[in-house]
Figure (tube, rainbow, N blue to C red):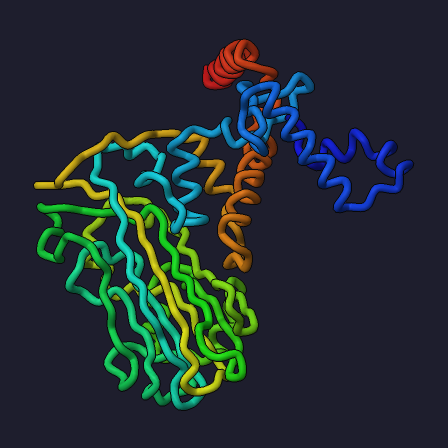
Length: 364
């Protein structure tokens, strides 16, 4: 089935001659979808996915189906962790059987007495009973983002079934697969004001280690994004930045890593917001409730790594994910030297053997 863009391009001359409006062209496309579905007994609006990774002209097919399932799950966990269908894993070479699960916390925060309110989290906390983040209440009395222990800055916890005593060098170890923090305005329209600042620490380490952070300090980071306060969700999304971020470790050692923040500056005191955070983990070790296989997909892992956005996403994660998958395909076709020469499965085998022979001759 043709996409809407291809359908309009195919019939553009006819539509232009007939003087059809944009709405009328959309109606024609919907009629085409219904006709196609009736002929194939398929699902309206869902095109048939190509089985081959390359088309006849040797151009990479960017179909979502051409990535392995583990890579698609990993990409979803990184770009849109709220819409993960199954607990994901990192498709690298550390493919140990692991326990895969997610934690979540939801709540509200309020702009304080000097017009500042915020919520920040440590996405690495995979157990309960330990502070996963902080949020402000109406008594918060500072213009800056402050750490814990300040009046009006309240701790909150996630819903993990584990406790800190379950983790250690000789016990369980974990690694973070994906995480995100989002917030939106829930107060009255007449009081809606201020600037939302969405921030991830560039090194995924505690952004409050140097001390309190003003809006000026936060905006010096190139990755920080901003938006006017509105009723849309605004997202701070985690991504790996160092080799240790995709390695198993003792999460207790990472308790100070508050690295995701959504803050409001210049708001009306008393404005209320809701927040929602989620983190996905893999755990290996002793006495785990259920181990499942992990997968290794180096090409898919490389495609995900190359497509990582340079700044915090400002669009809906679902939209960001679709763009991200296209960037993955572009990265594979442009940055992996052997990929564009593969016309199909047979070509894959022939060219790969040829490439390996050439590499062997260089080594000899």
